[in-house]
Amino acid sequence: MINKEEINQYLKEIEVDDLVSNIQIMGNKVMIDMLSHSPALHERKRMEIAMHEAFKQKFGDRIELKLNLIVETQEKPKIKGNAIPKIKNIIAIASGKGGVGKSTIASNMAITLTKMGFNVGLLDADIYGPSIPTMFDVISAKPSSVHIDGKDLMQPVESYGVKLLSLGFFAGTNQAVVWRGAMASKAIHQLLHDAHWGELDFLILDLPPGTGDIHLSIVQEVPVTGAIIVSTPQQIALADVKKGVGMFQMPEINVPVLGLIENMSYFTPKELPENKYYIFGKKGARRLADTLDIPFLGEVPIIQSIREASDFGRPAVMQEDGIVYGIYSDICKRMIESLIKRNESLPPTEVVRITTMAGCSTQ
Image 1: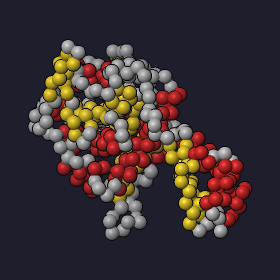
Image 2: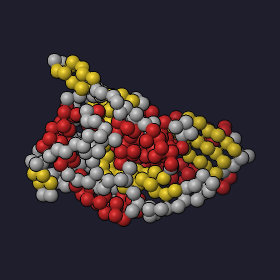
Image 3: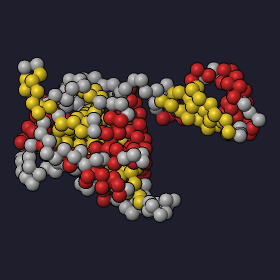
Image 4: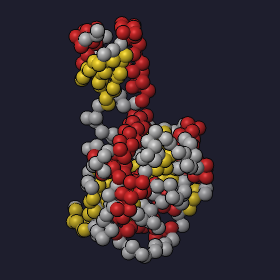
């Protein structure tokens, strides 16, 4: 029977004992919590393979190793050069078409990042269909005014620890916004630059669906650190994803795509918890991410409570059962891994300095 002393001695021999925080032994199963200095998936995989090979060579089939790699969290993702002071990372969440749950994804990710210890702001940049005030139960809220460095700025509304700004705070709930591109661009400028966001680790931009004036205005206003694309598994949605990815990857825009999220992936009835029904298609977004060579950040199943929570104004990651939070926590961790890799390998994004381009116009 293997014991902890024998395991500890071997960890010293291979000089990784300082990275191990916990060892548990149950029969022939040895469970080790081990620190990984690198959040990169390939580095963690390399460490995992090396550990398994070392233990196999030493103990053979006597034990079954279960390794839990823990990523250091002391350092948060860093980026320099953003046009908004004190904001480290600006993340655009986009979709090729409407109705794929982009705003629901943005809301739940914002709260999840807050629960993970980050300072987060969320800008509802969907000028024509703002939904963030409803999702955060702040429909009647109005941003206050604050005097900072001789300027009067908007103070974002705060809900569930997230700082929020949306055109929905200024337009009535039944008031249609009928603006040309120039007016919409001016509104985006004010929401970005005439607001007192304070210090943020992440400013999440909930973009309108498709590709158009607002998207171009955003990349002209601020250097977006990276973009996340949301889709359902349907082929018609995936076709539009390619356009969205293509827009961000255009040489004139050049915003790194941090990954793709598949929403409404499958449905599992409560009475049949082991069953998965792929109503809109199976793993289409995952396959497309592989084809486009961009990270796949995860899938969100069809869960009734996610829809109900959004309508009620209390995003589902706030629920006590933790099931939805677990899903979004995994997605956010993968996003952070992709973001750190992007920040380590690429220079800060530049503000786009163009007025017109093929297929796009600011007028």
